[in-house]
Image 1: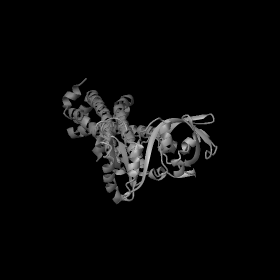
Image 2: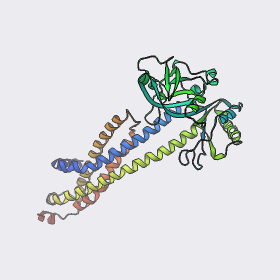
Image 3: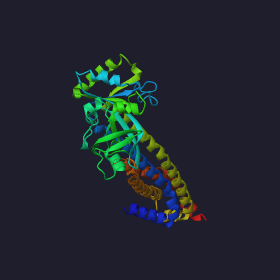
Image 4: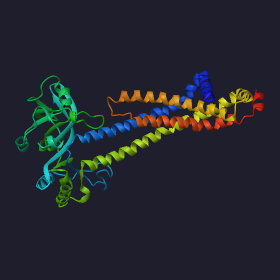
Amino acid sequence: MQTVLNSFSIAFRAIFANKTRSMLTMLGIIIGVGSVILLTSIGNGIQSYVTGQFNSLGANNINILPGGLFGEGGGFGGGIPTSKLRLRDAQTVAKLRDHILTVTPAFEGSAKVTYAQHTQSTTIVGTGPSYVDAANTKVQEGRFFTQEEYNTNEHVAVIGPEIATKIFGSIDPVGKKTTIGSQSFKVVGVTEAKGGGGIGPSFDTRVMIPIQIALELFSSDQLTTIIVQAKSQDDIQPAIDDIKKALSVRLKPDDFSVLNEKDILGSITQILGVLTLGLGGIAAISLVVGGIGILNIMLVSVIERTREIGLRKALGATPNIIMMQFLIEAATLSLFGGIIGTVVAYLLTLAINTKFPAVVTPGSVMLAFGVSAAIGIIFGVVPARQASKLSPIEALRYE
C-alpha cells in the first residue's frame, strides 16, 4: 500500500513540475471527453424532446402520411414526398365508423401574421375542429373554432401563446382581427402552452385556421397529414387495416403510409439512437489523438528521467514499481483531462439548453471517464514498460 501511495506522490510531483506540458498533454483528452459528452447529450436531448412531443399527442392516434414508408420519395425512405393526399381522402376515411372516433385533415405552411405594427413568420395549420383533441391541445383563452365555422369557411383563427405574446404583447388577442398572409382573420382562442421548439416548430407558435381557408390561402389542394383517432387501443390495428383498404381504391400503395404514434416514435428513436452513437464515435477519435499525445510525452519523460529511474532501481525499486509509477502518471493525466472535459461539456450543455434540447446523462459521463482512464493506461503501457526495463547501471551512466 505504501508503495502505491509513493508512486502516486511521485506521479503528482512529476505532473505539477511541468504544468504547461501537462496541460498541453491533457488538451486532447479534454477536447475528446468534452466532445463525446456534449454530442451524446445533444443526441439524448433530441430523443427526449421527440418522445415528449409524441407523448403529448393523443394515445390512440393514427397518422396517414404522404408517400410510402420505405418507397421511393416518401415517408422515411428518401426525400420529402409530393403529397397525393386530398380532402376527399379524409372524407373517405371519415365514413369508416367501426373503429374510428374522429378524422382530422391537416395542412401546414409558413406565413406572416400581422397585428398593428407587429409581424411574425410562423407555422399555419389548416385543420378541423377535432384537431383540439387529436393533437391533445387545450384552449387557455376563448375557444376553438366550431363545426359551423368550419363548414361555412369562416375566417377565424386559434393562436399559440408564444405567437400571441409576440404579436399582441399585453393586449388580449381574443376577438381581435389579425392578418395572415393577405387575408384578415378573427382570433377566437389562444391555446395552452405546451413548450418545446428546440427543434422544429413549437406548438406554442402555431396558428390554426379552417383547412379549406388554409388551402385557398396557400393555393394548394395537398394535405400534410390526416390524423385519425381510434376508439381504443384495441381498435388501432383494425382501423389501420380499414384505412389502407379504403384509400387503396384511389391511391397506390406508395402514395401514402398509415402509422400509429408508437410506430413513428419507434422508428425515429431508432434513427436518433444510431445518430447519437455515430456522433459519439466521431468525437471519440479525438480521445485516441489525446492518447497518442500522452504516449509521446510519457516517452519523452522516460528519456528525461533516465538517471532518476536508474537511481531508484539502484536503491531497490523493482521493475513493477517503476512501471506502476509511469502507468499512474499517464492515467492521472488522462483522468484530469477527463474531469476538465466533463466540466466544460456540462457548462456548454447548460448554455445551449436554452435554445436546443441537450441532456447530460450519468451514463455518458461514466463512459467518458472510463474511456479516458483506459486510454491513459493503454497509451501509458509502452513508456512504462520501457522505463521498467532500463538497466540501473546504464541509466546512471546516462547524461
